[in-house]
Amino acid sequence: MRYYVILAFLLLLSACNTEPSGPIPVEIVRQEDGGFQLLRGGEPYYVKGTVARDQFLDILVKAGGNSVRSRGDREFLDKLHGMGLSIMYNLPVQPERNGMDYDDTTAVRKQFDEVMAIVREYKDHPAILFWSLGNELDWIPPGIEPNWKVYDHLNDLAKAIHEEDPNHPVMTVMGTGDWEKVDSLIARAPELDLLGINSYADIGRVHGVLEERGWDKPIIFTEWGPSGAWQVRKTSWGRPIEETEAEKAELRRQRYETAILGHNNVLGSYVFHWWSRQETTHTWYGMFDEGGRASESVDAMQYVWTGEWPENRAPHLVSLVIEGKGAHDDVTLEAGKSYTATATVEDPDGDPVEYAWELVREPDQYGAYAGGGEIRQPPIPDTVPADANSAEIQFTTPPTPGEYRLFMYAYDGNGHYTTANIPILVK
Image (tube, rainbow, N blue to C red; front, side):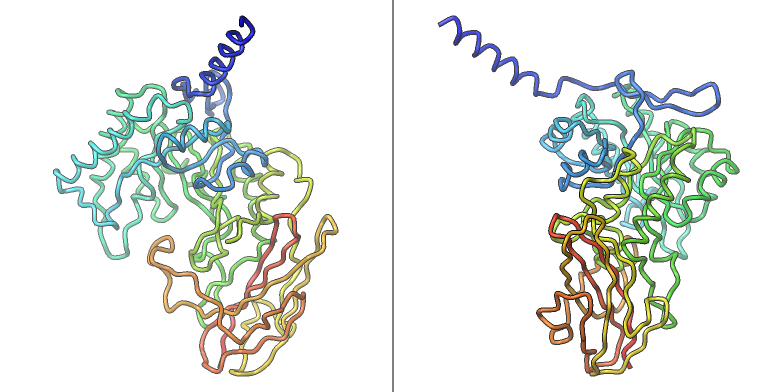
């Protein structure tokens, strides 16, 4: 009988130990060299994070990641904590581009109360790392004068959060457009503890610009990755040329090692984007495909986070051409004709590679902001053979002239893939 009582007690104790046990204090310490160090629970903590939802988190942990930029309910926070992950919690501060009017005191107060209710609900959860007030509140549609009262609002919120929750730093996130906005942020929101920066091809310029503007607090890169669709070369007919997955993986590695690591004012980063996403194309920013396969970029992040490549790596794309021409060659074809497309793919582990191809029509226009309103373009029937599991295929252009893209996907059968595409003008 005594054995069963002890066993029951141990099981109860084990169950209790799995429950969140209260906040883990987080603080930013200024060091003697003028840099900063993040402490979590009194221990150094360098953020190795990604922008994520509740997907592929086991792969994130295996790759050496320790944090996500997201939001969610208590169940989600419990899951993160149970996996050893923290969260930069995105608080719902709305930008002007979404219709928020910072001259409307009623709307501002309503938003203030909603944000503080979330802080009060989750402030003692051990998964919380930072509170983040909105995303790119500085991005205003062209031709509209920004209302910098938004930063007054951020300061009021940061002050209130500090009083309610002394355990977690407060930040906001801005992009890298008009840098004069940093002057307004410094003047109007001194209560902020750090600044999140979303930056892509221009990530190497961020440190110099912030220093020039007088920002003397730490930063964290809250979005970064491949070059943005607005930053790459375009075809002669104006369509952005997407970097191949192999190029993106190498750029992620290089940008992490040069612009993020080794800078004493950087507390870490959140790489973009830990799932599939439609923005310009369905492959541009996501590090997984629509079937949940991990890309070469996931391998690259594991390498920079841990110093070791995965045991089994994604296929590596060497080249993709149509009749010998690549994406930068302004591929122009005739309507209703047959052409040859060839992919050269190498698998680091010698795994057999399978292929899939799609020809899609370019959308009439892209989303005005972050892919908003965009729809994944469906494959055009009768252009690519149904059994096109080959590194070289014959495809047929549509009978209707227009702008298209040919996508190639290569799979290794072990949950990995690589991809590339070529914009096509059909005359």
